Image (cartoon, rainbow, N blue to C red):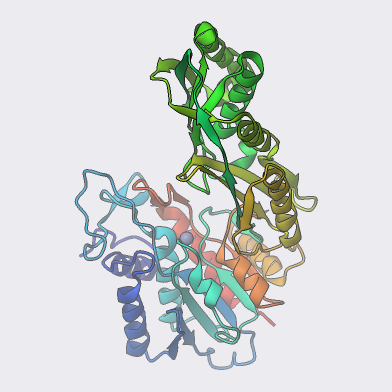
Length: 485
Ligand SMILES: [Zn+2]
């Protein structure tokens, strides 16, 4: 007997427990693919696989419903593998061990994989439920959503027929998602000249730490500090007031995170070194005044260290600091159509003194409107190329522009009100979903995304709220069984 038996809806949880036993990290989906294909065969359901490993399993229409519109249910097969450092877990062989705690299901020491295992389990429950009176249902399972969306990216036109798709990969019960942002990277490589440090110089290390950071999509509008921007401000002021020279400046590391820390090494004339350190320490008060409670752990520090042997020459230093200073960061535009939706943003993600006197500057742009994404990427490119940097853009992925006129939205909203007696929230997210790729590729596809409540996804604290799984299931079945004609 499984620890989760007794939870409702029983078929969804039964399949979820099965899936937990199958290792399925991104790019290692072989076992779950085999499992799904065997499942289809066992239940006499037509299935197919494409060249990148996406799977489609089809449930024929209920007798008499052959003329009802086909509906596509979509989830992703892979999961993020994060674990507590002291928990022994082999991601290629070991099962996830779920347990119940305070109304939630979570896992021992690891991510639970409810993102998107609960989507997969509910598709399997739909496929094996003989009582669902609906037209043909196509269940699409994509590979590798979490590390590049290559499954969705390589999906071929015609792999499924339905013109309405429900994405089962969102994490907030009570919210219907109808749009997402596309994203791309803009990366600058700036060559610089170094010169020997002047005699009579002192070395000083400056650090910016303790910022909140956060996801560059979901949290870009929260006004958190950007360590690269703050360090740039400090260095420009010190350049102006004390004529300091920069030896190196590194900050940020993940392209999709707002940078939390930065470290710089500078050379200052011995006669002003104490003043420089005092000025930096005092700058903390100015920043506290600007950020207040929102960045209460922010810490600016400076200390004397060994003198570096070289520093940037004047011209290189000015070009670096000017370009970082004018490079935009944060929200560029809010949606005119949907309240509280960031439409376009950019994240100045990191600066790094790499080998061969090259500085790498990494930035990411997001927008639910494709042309706006390219517009802001161009803005960033201008700042970097004015400084003499070589700039490249990644291909990125497209957004899904929300439409309040969507039929599947109307159907789902009505179902939600009928079932739960209240209005659902209708939102778009400022982060990527596979729907953006479907939106671009399958013109006219009508889509919506909803799911049960999952907290702490992509961390060992990931948990799914049990009561919302039943609500999610009731809504899903109601929408599927609504006349889709
Ligand atoms: Zn997911």
